[in-house]
Length: 98
Image (tube, rainbow, N blue to C red; front, side, top):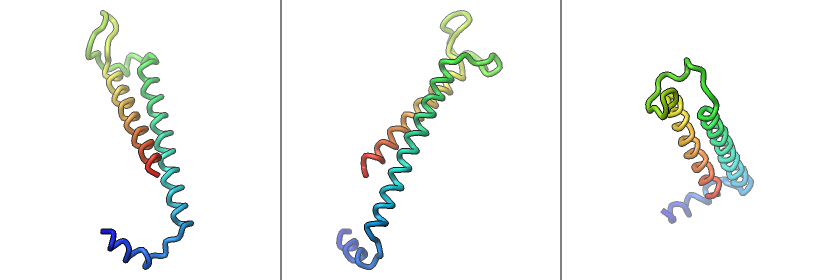
C-alpha cells in the first residue's frame, strides 16, 4: 500500500496550502460537532430539570411517589443526554487525531 502511495503522490497536485485548508476544515467540523453536542446536553438536562406541562407528560413509567415518577419525557431526555455525550466524544476524538 505504501508503494502505491509513493507512485500516486508525485502525480497529484497536492500542496501544503491545500493540506492546511483540509486540516482547518476538519478542525472546524470537530469544534462545531462539540458545540452541537453541548447544546444537546443542555437541552436534555433542561428537559429533565424543568417541569413539563401535563399534556407533554404522556404517562408515568415508574412511580417514585403517588404523584411523581419517571415519565416518558424523562426517558427521551436521557436518550438525548446520552446521544449528546457520544457526539461530544466523537468530536473530541476527531479533534485529537489532527
